[in-house]
Length: 344
Image (cartoon, rainbow, N blue to C red; front, top):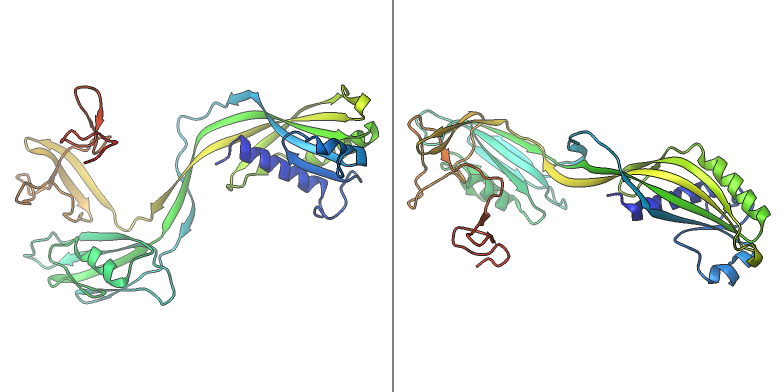
């Protein structure tokens, strides 16, 4: 995520690259040795071994906090996938069995799943899908067990899932994507101060840096995003010339984004539900692949609630799942009255 700290670093590194196009061990475009840093000069920079008094110039980068301005943005910034890591787990189907494999020396990762088409008369709906997010600690056996637990008629045997009544098993694997979205866009004025021990040195440094930066419109940030920069003016400040300190401020208006990131698995199956409110609760009329029965509403005897049409009945989903509020206004974790911060 870009903020004033990472943006200051990006601007300082950009200026360093412009001043030293052949690397910091080469010559600067001003012909003078120049040190670039975030923050103001130190006392040692004025009179030390590498100081203004020794002919060393300085470029400092500082954000001007009072210049912050939020930039108007659209009503919504969508999540965008920026990268996808592949699945390292293999699935093989042979009749009514599904075998999991992990190559030697490879860290397991990704999403694995299967859709089971069952013979007529099976208790489990045909087209039931199962999926599992693999972790680095998984083995082929644990993955097979996790998949088998999602289908009532399936059972694991080592790294194999066996579904006796299956007439076809369709296996699929997917990767894990990284998604980002912009949550806020803002602009801040940055002061780039040039410090030199003479007015000639300041003019040489200022002219060279201004010309080199004039073609820069966007600078890369360390998180992979970019910030827009616009030149906003320059000013010579000679209040310290009696101490042989000559300064020029170059101002850049920088627009940068605040970013949120999350991981998201690739979709293996298309599952849809039409929600219909019945006297028993919220009935889900599904289409496409069939969800496994894991997580559906059951009674104390683990009986699955169904409506008259045989659809699974689930509790209406709330936006703050697992949380409630008691009469005193405390956020509690469950119906037992436990405080969210102190689960029992």
